[in-house]
Length: 289
Image (cartoon, rainbow, N blue to C red; front, side):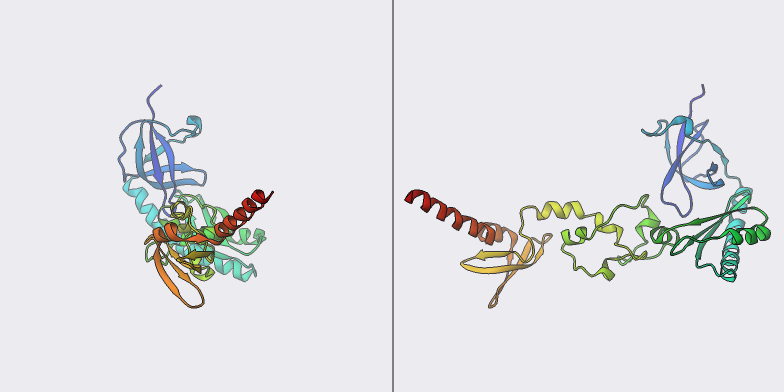
């Protein structure tokens, strides 16, 4: 059996790379290749080369590269992209004329134009059987209508995040992770949903990036609003900056900015104070007995 080499191919608008096989080690990174995917013939870009198959992948299920993309293939791709833009508007017009509540966000032709896929978002399920008939009569090829959610829409459309950079989901992120409001709490962020939400209207994926680091940094530290005795006075911990290692203590008459090290060395949390007092009472009782 001939040696098989493996390449990872990334397709336009998709950050995830897929594994394909090739009979000869003749491709290079950034080469454009024609592949046969579940959607039909598509052009992708080689982003990695390997002689070993990644663990967990079944060799029998790996498809082979059809060919290195020719100039003719690239011309077809460019023409298909232009035609897809026009197809998107046609599909949206047809949907509107049928009174369907859906927003078409992308249209894609396969390289051989045997199929056109329309990707849309909608609040619920859409009965698009009549729409399929209209589109088939216009485009004379197979039609696929694919519904996606708000996060997938943001990944497909792209944009600039609040950090000033391209959206992570569009640029490199492969999968959507579970994001919870607790991640914002761990990072001591103001719980303003508008500021914590991304283009998709859901919590920003980047909240997870530094979550574990903040959990480690906050280990052993008091929670916000915890009461602490410091230099003989009771205070409340009103804010912390675990990066700069400082915190703010406040009571009715005073406010202090101190280092977390000072808080650790000189501060006594209310629970600890109560525990010590309770222990002292218990010891006194034992001595009396």
